[in-house]
Length: 313
Image 1 (spheres, rainbow, N blue to C red):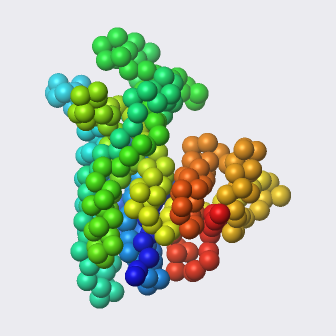
Image 2 (cartoon, helix red, strand yellow; image 1 turned 90 degrees about the horizontal axis):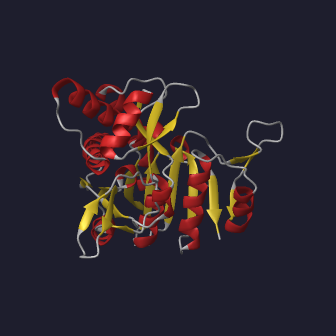
């Protein structure tokens, strides 16, 4: 029986620093990432692919803002914007993975799923929203948005204005994960939980409802990996290994490391919030909940077995 892997593509796999985000740029980046991820097929894995959407959803919010100011087109809520980017990025990954497999002479079905992720509306994150999204606003615009829409804002430390902040709650459950597992174990490549998933809550009457939030992509991917009983969870980023004492003369690459050891480094503040810390937490969560290993590394090293930082029990 083939092994099953969940692969979380980082934002750098879709859009490089300094790029404008044109479709041609994104397609070129995604082809390269898919070419690297496809190396896992040679290692006997069936694949589920997750992905970020940070730059893309930010651009969608800007587009909605411009359309509202210029033409009065109603702005769409965060859950709809996440759904938009899930569809567009999922389409690009599916297309470029098909191109990669065609070059390798491999025939596989590839399917991209629009995925809701259930969160708890009583999650403490909703009382303290910290995730910046969308454009910068003047103080006058900020006051107007606060009054009209109840948005919350934080002032940019660099003085660029005010940015809306939303909650980043923990994922509770992944919609249709059973379908994802069935399709993947049948040998299909499944693309899902894009951007951490479309944030949704369940009301007391049992109905689902979208909510303004951004779910951490790596935590959502880890939850999915646990649900579908994946053998391995790969978090792809732009560095070869997780490091301690980063950017100091004592900098050290972490290779194979236990949950207990890396948890101590996390507690000691070795990993930056908003960067490596969430990835480490997601990796720990997967192994704590029965996964064999989490691998955090650069996608270019996937063909080298044993590369990267490997979190084990």
